[in-house]
Length: 476
Image (cartoon, rainbow, N blue to C red; front, top):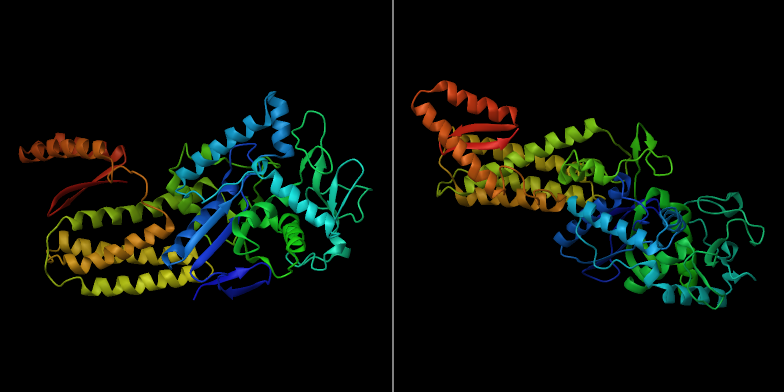
């Protein structure tokens, strides 16, 4: 049974899909005015794992993620660079995909953009005006009236009378209530604009996600997610305008999932505080799978403190798992009809069940990964028994353990990139030649050359291991 923590109800609930056998997801995407930082990456890695697990459980998953390609920050960046807003957005959308591809984040089914959804946004605003939930001003601005929606505050738990102007909400005497928010902004000189019944202008921030999620997922869908910083006001406002538009206070998204912040020395990482690290820069020092593994070693709702030390720890852990994968590949090449892996096969089955149980408990990747480490240990023991202890190999029984290990890696999203000692054909050929030269030196009892090769490889981060099947190499 899959259970998820629903921010809307503040409880862990059983997942009951809107449509049997299907799962629909909308995740708020980036505003592409700069390279994505590690805090931006966390929700997308999180939802990538969620998608993978849902698919493993047999759900047909539809995943939508937007780009806010029309925004004040993009416009400001374009002015500073004396270029078009669309050039800025396009540049950093490209950067987004480069970063996410490096983190093994699979692409969404659709990436709608604000600039491509204007007619749908305008129609939605018209509906809200007609129903009395929104009001236009003489200058062409249109605001949503929060007092008209009785459920305002139900996601964040805030009471309207206690609220003060929050993020992205400017105090404006023209508003009926200080918390009313812009649905449409009248055009300013030098800014992009589109035609509307209220004159030239562009959408407000909140309306875009409502229009896009309703367009591509329908009036009721399963999951809506993003970072915890979006709970208020963005997601609160999405609920208010969407449910008012469709006339259903139980419609729109059914399960709201929010990931915790990534912090630097316990302070929230953000571009506004200039204490952020871009994925692009981190990738200069660490492989993408290490960054992904670092993120997933902590439950998605918990805060995650970022540091080079913790990345190094994640790298060491991932290397251990990678070494086990290489042991699996080596054993798979052996013939064997013995019955020596029955115990390993049963243990793998137990650990796979525990892995699935962890993922079913609000996508607890931290606990799931611990089951993978436990299986890694069991496989390593069997490997040593076969290669060094002389135990006969059981190909059929071992296949069950290897399959479980592969399934775990598939959900976590690792072993998908070429690594030295694994899939790099050139590296394999070069190392085979070096090992051959060293073996010849040993046969000739030229220990100085043999030791020099071994020590030189070790300094370069390559370890040689002897087994009854020959010498294998791996990254330290």
